[in-house]
Length: 267
Image (cartoon, rainbow, N blue to C red; front, side, top):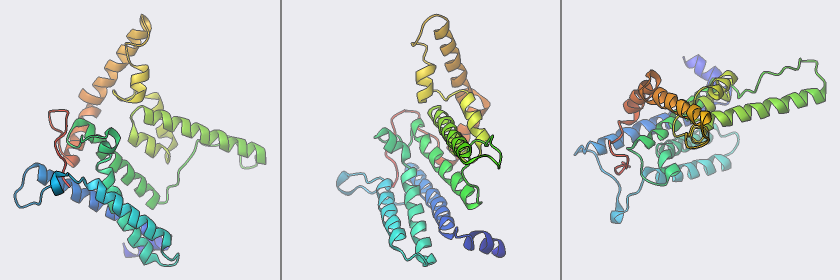
């Protein structure tokens, strides 16, 4: 293991990325444990930070950590691996604190313990998964090029532009369909973008609001939209995939409150 770590992490220059990943995972695990203990009102665990009745969310500390870690990484000597790794670890810790409240930033209200707050867990796992791929040396990919290795310069350039554009379009459609994990991982594994593009969108996603709303169109068009919305709702709520996602999210991040409005989050 020591030899593998030295060969694949240290010698390849990925030690800062590894430190970022470890701090990111540990930071997310700690803050989720903390918020769940606060939610359970465990007496021996410190509660929220509320100076002057102002609830300071832990994303505030995350922003500070990211700023300090980012600036330190910029000004650190290029040859100083220890400084760069430490800065990356601090940045990873800050990123974990910020992404753990990603849903709050998106909605501009406290949805931490509501169903909308599940988006934070999705964002954390997407970021962690992409970091793992980068640690393994997997680079972002584009659509397989139809041009052979002996293609001319302009032909190769045109093929590259088309490939990148198509990858961007498919990734955008996948993300608009509410499939964060598929869209992010699809940047590294192109076939996932095709799957995410052709499959149903999540209910409540921008794509579903634009193309599945039965109030848009009339006659057969409205009926088709209604059927798509019904299939999408069943698949991502009551279907096997929806139940698995909900159970996994509850296991990692905690089950949401029954009420849609969120209770105060832990810090």
